[in-house]
Image (cartoon, rainbow, N blue to C red):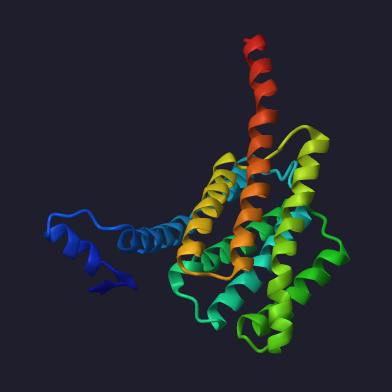
Length: 235
């Protein structure tokens, strides 16, 4: 018995017999459920960040290259996952993350006026190349190379933001909720990737996500404490 690729027959059979499902039955089931939970959560993961920027009409403390590189990384990850035939529960979040990331970059640029020629050139190049990559019309060797470099792209997307936070001793308009969901999603993805027998490179990407998102999350907590202390003294 399957629903959306989730086989629940073994679990139901064990429960009918009054037994708790064994590990070989339960872990794949949990993995699938968590995978779809990540996909569902991804539909709103960047909304707190978008709403915070719109509310304050400011992109203070945000690294523009970091968010632009995220768009490139999500594009490659989505294209590769689709054309490798991975189950939707293993990559579905990339669909929603890519759409939200593009919206987020657009908003960041809107509040970063005036825009230089370099910004327009980067946007034009992405619009020209992304459809080809998403359609899978890329040489297989190049496709593998792009995917292999995807983790470096995501790492490079986080490092500028981490460094900017450290230099400013502030996280500006970064959303705690968005960073927390990114961190939690990376942790869950390690488990689901192992259960789905995903390539080591996929698991490595999730581990990198845990480290980098965890670092940014800790910076938000660390650099907000002094501000809270100052507010109490003023009162």
